[in-house]
Amino acid sequence: MASLPDALAASALARQMAEIALDEELILANLAFDPVVAGRQLREKRFSVADFQGVEANRVLLGTMLEMLEGEESLTLANVIDHLREQKKGTRSKLEWVGLERVEQLFTNPFLAPGVRMLEDLEPVIDRIRDRNIRNRARRLLITYSEKIAQASADALEAVGNCIQELRTLFLENTAGYLRDLTSHLYEMRELVHNGRARKLGYSGFDTNFPLLQERLNGIQKEFYLITGGVGMGKSTFCTQLAWDLVNLNPSLTVLFFSLDMNRLDVTAKIVAQAQEIPIDYVKNPFMPNAEFEKKRLEGLELVERRQERLMIVDESGGRIFLDDIKKLVKRVRLERGGDLAVIIDPLFKIHLRDERISFFEKCNQLSSELKSLCAAERVTLIATAGLPKAISHRRPRREDLQEIMGLLYDPYVIFFLYCDYLNDFETPFLEWEWGKDNFMIPISELHLAKNKMGVANTRIFYRYFEAYAKYKECAPQEVENYTAMIENLQKFKEDKALKENAAQAHQRREDEF
Image 1 (cartoon, rainbow, N blue to C red):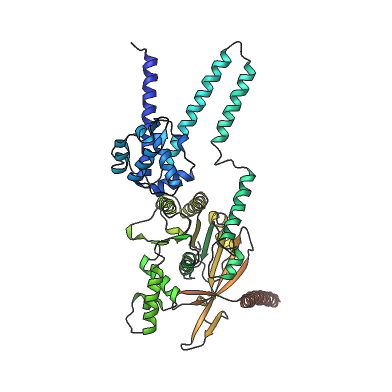
Image 2: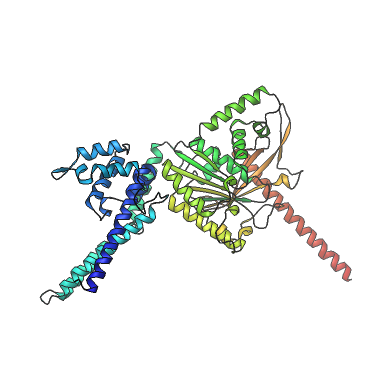
C-alpha cells in the first residue's frame, strides 16, 4: 500500500499532466480552427515544438503544422495528413506517431474534448505553458545540484557556482522579450530603414495628403497621436480625412476606425464626399438631379468599396464600447489582416471603463495610459481625438489647457491643437473668398503642433476648410509663413493695446486721487 506522501505526489503529478494535456490541446485546436490568427500569435511569441512538454504525438503534430505555416501552405486536413504520411520519425511515419483518427478529429471537431474551447487570444495559454516549463526546469536543476552538494566528495562551491550559472542561463532565455541589448535595437532600426527604402517611402512613417504635416512628423509613425481642441473645431472631420488618406495611400496598412460620436453611415458619407469632393448632403440624400454630382457619387462609392478589406468602421450600434473591447478587436484585426494597422478613436472620452466610480480626470488619465500601452504592445498607429477639458472655443488653445489631465499631456507622442478663428469672429482675417462658379467664403483652420517628441514642436500648419464636402486642404508653405506672421502681429497688437489700456486706467486713477 502506497504511503500518503507518495499518493499526494502521484496525485500532483497526474494533475500537472492533465493541465499540460489541456493547454497543448487548446493550442492545437485553435491552430487547426483558425490557422491565420493562431499561427501569427504563435509566431510572434516565438512558440515552438520545444514549448510542448507533453506526449510526443502532440510535439510531432505541432511541428508539422508550424512547418506548413512557415512554408505558407494551407492548413487543411488533407494537407496535414499528406505531410504526416510523407515524413518519417525513426522507422515510422509521423502519421503513425500521431494517428489518423486523432488528426481527423482535430480538424473536423477541434473543440470536442472537455475543457477545449475557441479562444480569441492564445497569449494566456502560451504564458501558462512557459511558466510551467520554467518552473519544471528550475525544479529539476535544483534537485540535481542539491544532490551534488549533498555528496561529501564534490566541491560545494563549484556545485553552487554551476547551479547559479545554469539558473542564470534559464533566466536570460526566458526574459529575452523584456531584456534586449542595444544590438537588437540597432538591428530593428536598420530593418526599418531597409523596409522603407524597399517600399520607396519618402518618410519613415505612413503617407498622408498633407505634405507639410508629413515633413514635420516624418510620416505617421506607430505612436500615439492626440488631436484636441474646442467644440466644433473639426476634430472628427480631420481624423476622418486622415483615415481615408492612410488607407488610400498605404497599400500595406489596415485602418480600424472607432466612431463613438457619429454613426458608421455618416462617417462613410464623409469619406465618399472627401474622396470625390462632392457635397456631403448629396452623398447621403441625392434628391436633386445633378449629373455631375451623381457620377462622382457613384465613383466615390466604388472607390471606397475597393478599400473595404482595409477600412473598418465600428460605431455604437451594437452597444457601448469598452476599453477591453477595443483592445481585443485591435489585436484580432492585426492578427487576421497581417501587415500594419492604424487605429483611430473619435472621441477618446466616450470609451467606457468597467469601473464607473472613478472621476472624469482619473478616467482620462487611465485611458491615455492604456492607449499608449496598447500602441506599444501591438505596434500600431493610434490617433485619438479629445475635446479640451474646459471646452475652450473662444481662443487659441495652449498646452496649459491640458494640465488638468496630465495623462493627455504626457502620454501622447504628438499633440495637435485644432482651431478655427472664424467660429468666434465672422470678421476674422483668417477667411478667404473662393472665386468661381459659386463664390463662397472659406475659413482657414490652424493645426498647432503643441508637442512632438521627435521633431519640430510649437509650430502651426494652416488649412482651407471646404465645408460642403467636409475636407481640409493644406495651405502652401508661403501662405503658412504669412498666416503665422499674422498671428504674431495680432498677438503683439493685443498686448500693446492691453498695455495702453492699463496705462490709461492707471493715469485715470491718479487723476481721481487728486
